[in-house]
Image (tube, helix red, strand yellow):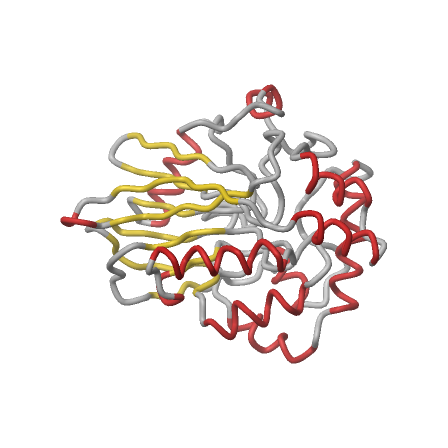
Length: 277
């Protein structure tokens, strides 16, 4: 029987919103993001995480502690769901026997072993969705998609699939995560935004990581994608010290993913190319 999904309704949000996803246990990247938020004058109450706080890197507990301590709004990514339900894999729906599947058995087992049990009750409280109104738009925060937590939605994904998400979730703005690449798609009065992830580079050959800022100045919605530097050398070395996948540790330093298994043809073609909006 499929688990019943939960949605948390928030009061309407105002002012700048900082949206991000995929911390992936990368404490060094998270700490810099918090510094950026402070510089931008964005309080933690206006920060939203699209899930997967835990992932490939070496410091899951430290990242969970920061998100919890700061009271940053977060939905449950597939990793949080799997950890709180004591499942044996990360729930990413990777192809069996593929490189992502093989590596995930390593990093997920590490995260599961390291996870402090004190976080389990909090992880169980994380909703699958957030709902609120922003700049007059009905907004829904999802991980992969409204229909499937682990569904990979990209810029090149057909609009008909995205349109069904808007219809079924009764949303005009969807903020999503999971795919690892920042993009937006704006059609038929509906806007899909994925701010990217901060725990891994965006397969563009750069070590910077990505997030987004929404603004409702004058009641109109505007948004921008931003990238930033952090101590990727330290994050990479900590992965190696803890026997996490060497190729993922190398990705932090090269900006190139080990493989493009999850990517459609268009996104695969863009590997190593600068991201422009």
